[in-house]
Structure formats: C-alpha cells, structure tokens
Image (cartoon, rainbow, N blue to C red; front, side, top):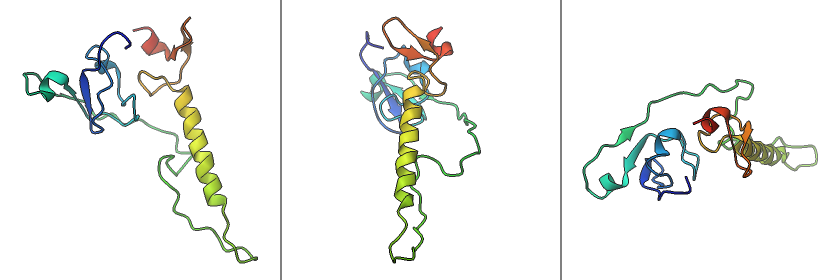
Length: 134
C-alpha cells in the first residue's frame, strides 16, 4: 500500500512494513519474505489496547522433485579428483540454487508471495489473479 503508513509489526522477523488494511492480505513479510506467525498493531506495540493476530499454520505443499531446500547450504564435501584438488561443483550448485531462488522471487506475487504473477496493471506492477481481483 502506497497510501498509508506501515503500522503493523510482523513476527518473528520484527519488520513493520505493512498498513492495517493490507496486513490481512499477506502471508510472508514483504521485506525479508519470512513466514508470518503473528501480527501486532502499532498501538499494541506502544502499550495501547488491541489484539495480536495469530496466523494459522498453513503448510504449502512443494514439489518433491528437489530434496534440497533452496535456502539451505549444501553440506556435501567435494570429491577428491585425480589431480589432488577438490571438486568445486558444490559452489556451482549453490550459485545455481540462488539464481533459481531469485527467479522464483521475481515471478511470485508480491502480495501473497504464494502464487505466480499472472496479472499486470497499466502502471507495470503485477500480481496474481486472486490478489489483483481484491
């Protein structure tokens, strides 16, 4: 939201990057993309009345094609080659995983961070169909 001031603290990351109107729409922090466990209004942070909103635990099913999650570093040790040096393809795999993660983040909906962007507005911004229809 570009019109209202950020007034909701998201936990566990502690970022305050969303207004109260947009807060119910997001499932991940728009700053660090961490899953949100709860949301605390600014007034509650300052000791005022109000409630902390707990987020339901929804598990997102991902493809089982990859057994290594993109956020985790690979812990394999490079095999010893016949010239005495170690195989460095491990770092190549990590670079490729990071590139894949970057591409996924660029194509994911910036509102819900769950679905692919498939709607583009006249201004050039994009969202998924469900978030765009809201």
